[in-house]
Image (cartoon, rainbow, N blue to C red; front, side, top):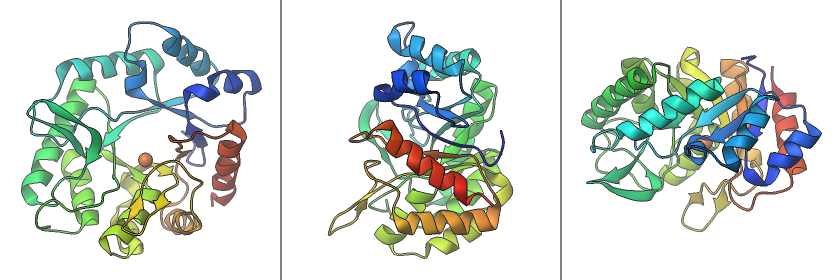
Length: 267
Ligand SMILES: [Fe+2]
């Protein structure tokens, strides 16, 4: 994919309008689990949209870092979806969301420990083998650290990439949110990531509360995040970028405006 490609998250309220207007977007990103069914209207829409645009598939339900066994049926459905839609990227989160078979409706942070690092890197290798293709992993936003940290988050992420052989979906908003919530310099994070391991970028909006920045995906990209995106591009060069918006989904034109701003910044 062209490194200057910019797209938006594909959300149901925009399906029909995207097909009618065919806005000038380089690709669209679909949430994998929304299309795991055997039929129905969602899949029919995705078929139609796929005939117009390249896709990426972004998962939230694999519980990559969990100690539960990997869900074979989830992997099989993801593999089947990828075979059908031939996405440019398949991605998941560097997180866990289940324990003892109980699923949390959230992406929870991994402890920044050697043990967790080894565990999640081995799981990524297993997932890539099961899918028969590369999996991109995304750095998540978080509000707490689980246990004592043996290393900074950026070192953990970089080492996961090195050990597993996968590449990163770098969420620049999540770097910014975590830098405020955990008190670090976001430029240290960006500087520590090997640019050759960054396949894709996410941008999204957060909500400011007295206690923390909350990664709601329900607001425009903040000026601080645009500035960090500019620094990221200066260091790494252009990368395929998706604007994410999941809560209080606005008119398509709002997303297209954000995408245009990202496109105008590509070096
Ligand atoms: Fe993201």
